[in-house]
Structure formats: structure tokens, C-alpha cells
Length: 83
Image (cartoon, rainbow, N blue to C red; front, side, top):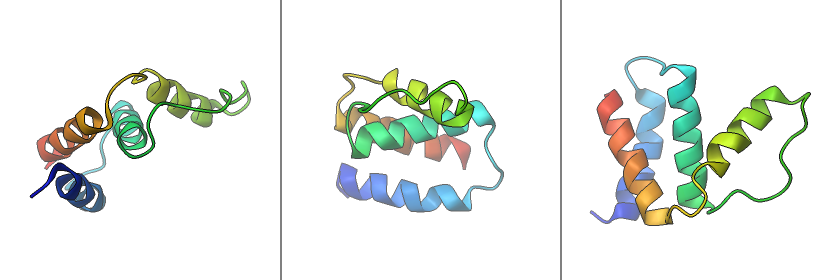
């Protein structure tokens, strides 16, 4: 199974985890997903009033420069560890 197939399976499997991950883990999953599927964070950082959007953007931006393959592998590994 290719990394892309594993990544897509992990994304689908993320909806069936035995319990909801904590917020920091959810942010990590979001950031790895965005980096693995879109690449480096783009656009402006959300404003102060959008605290959730800002936290998500910051988590994604911390992965700047991480390759898509590396981010996808980290995502797959994290989902596996949560099962």
C-alpha cells in the first residue's frame, strides 16, 4: 500500500477512533493533515477574535518546510497510536 493510500485510510479511520483525542492532539492531526495534503500554510494568520482559526493556523505554520510525505507518514503514525 502506497503512503498516499495509507494516508487516505488514516484520514477515513480518524472518524472511528475509540475515543476523542485531546485538543492538542486534534491540533496536531489538523496540522499534519493540512501539511500533508496542501503544503505550507498560506494566507494571512487569522485575527485575534478567531482564536480557534488562529490556533489551527499556528499549528499548521509550525510544520512549514515539512515535506508532504513526511507529514503524511507522521499523520498515519499518530492515528495508529490512537487506535
